[in-house]
Amino acid sequence: MARASRLRQSVAVIVVAVAGLVGGLAMMAPLEAAQVTTTGGYLNWGIKESFRSYIVGPIAKGSTSPQGGASVNGDGTYRFPLASGTYDASTGVGSFTFSGSVRFQGHSGQLDMVVSNVRVQLSGGSGSLVADITSKSLESATTVPYTGVTLATLTGASAVPGTNVVNWTGIQSTLTASGAQAFAGFYTAGLPLDPLTISAQLAAASTATATSTATATATATGTATATATATATATAPSTPFVGPAPRPSSAGLLVTSPGAAQPVSQLTGALASGGCSVETLALLQQGTWRIMIAGAPPAANAGLPASLEGATPFFVRCV
Ligand code: HEM
Image: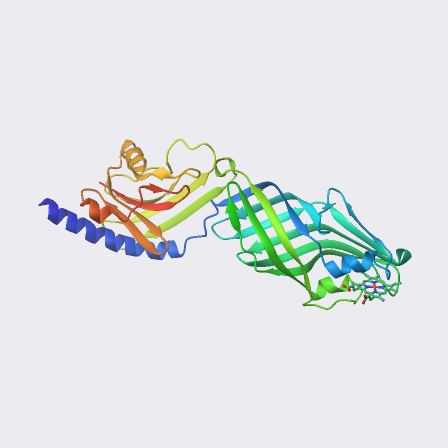
């Protein structure tokens, strides 16, 4: 068979196979590979400026006391150390638990409120703030626990990534109905609370306990039926991809090892060592297939990046 004709046939097979894979990939569970744990950081939050002023002012004549590692910032807001958390830059999902508490006292002890165990859940631009609160009731003067109460809803969270750190400033917070109860009825749901600033230091991707799982099935043609399941754990990878190389004359979906980007030349080299001479390597990037076909003119293969990010699923067909 002439080379051009073989190439045309190969392209046709791949296009159909890739079309089948698109369906498989659409059903793929979201990758968890990008989720990393936090190693430190903090939350700056003043709860509500007018409440702080009221507490230490002439009406309540009280005090505010940060405890258990929480401290007061120069602007009067509080800093709660980040005790634990996870963050996934690919989905914008973050879950953070902060240590420290703040006690508000006033009216000669009739007002006594403690906010502790502050947790923040973010998903993209919005989220919620949960805390454990105890607050003395105005009527009965008994201390009422509000454990795990969703104190505020969060909006306007815009992540600013850095090197092993991600920051948010000016996250808007709004009091919920359940949170309002802890303020003895002086506030109503929907009231704006102080904005939040969060800084989360992230474990380096190569040392994170990230796990990546990708599964896809393509049954579009008899010649290119691919079923691949790959699980990647972030432990010093010895090959640039995870899982066994597909056998000759078969296709599969692999995942690049988590961590540093993997040059395509290294991927094809490692696949060749595993007995797979790569005929096609394809990557779905933001809804567009980037395809490299061995032997095709360089211009035709220009769509595939020179290297693939760590923990990236990619399709490969071997001859
Ligand atoms: C002897 C008991 C109390 C008295 C006499 C009292 C009195 C007052 C007064 C007069 C105000 C209005 C302040 C102003 O408009 O500037 C106020 C505001 C407030 N009180 Fe109390 N209060 C008492 C107990 C409590 C308790 C137990 C809580 C529970 C946390 C509480 C939470 C608040 C809040 C959240 C405000 C609104 C502060 C703001 O301006 O943002 N109070 N209180």
